[in-house]
Length: 400
Image (cartoon, rainbow, N blue to C red; front, side, top):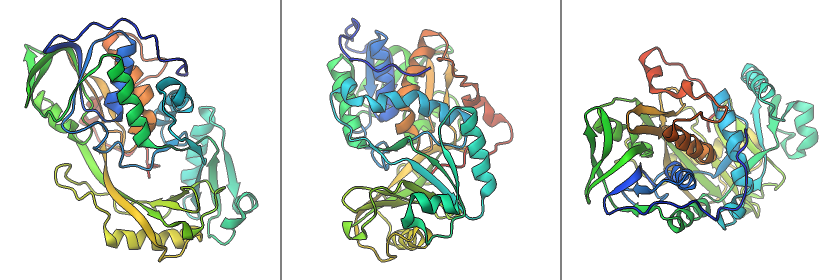
């Protein structure tokens, strides 16, 4: 079932928020929290967002703005399919052009052909159009890649990137216009309960009550779960991105390139510039309260060298325009937690870098969970936190 595009207004009549009470409290004004607030607003709920800083300044804007259908797990593909119409019609819905650029994604390998075969089978089963390519096919479509060592690739045309800052702005302006109240620079210090039910939060600015609280706190979701008496193994992993100067001369027709053997990726960023990133075999947890958001020079050197060896499109010493580090708030199996965690508390966190591209669908699912109805025709049982009671396996290893 696809999300239907259409005009945002007129909005349903939303009850005014009393001084300290609302239907729903959303913890976190990142993209997931904002999308949930928007969906709840459309469902006629009064909503208060509690945010420790400013909207989107955490991890939602420390990304490459990627939107893609090609993933390695059933649930991630379906969430991307459900969210795509929102990105394609974002300006109509939110009044801001997100500057969506469709590059497509090309997963490449010279070793892990089994991984590509598994991904191809999944995309086939879910009706995602893609092409499996050998060396000849890759070179025929993109002659600039002729000198690479890749032997196989999966190319999905649908997908690309957008300006995540403009997306955040569109959501914020829209939910505020609809009556959502933002409590900014407000830290959640406690979860208020009435017996077994969560009924609000205690914050640095006082207490707020509601019928439902949504934990969309990104890298701090684990802290909120602990305050509610739960232990969910959220993990934040460091990632870094850099922009190469236009002198790199990256062809505009090149798709988003992902070398799955060496965990490095590159995409055009307009005017010959390129965005480069990758874990390079290091996927380590970091402290959300103590990580360094600056680009590290050793990583910058290593990733430029690997990108040059992998894609043969840029020099290893290509000049850098800028760069940044961020966190992928996730879990031990790289899939999110999306559930009714206890009466009055919904958890929507741990997306491991897919929060932006999946946010519209997640917002709708959260609204459905509050209403007690079905979650589209999408089974989210695999995203329950109870899965951590058993042995964990990596369900989707295509993140980059």
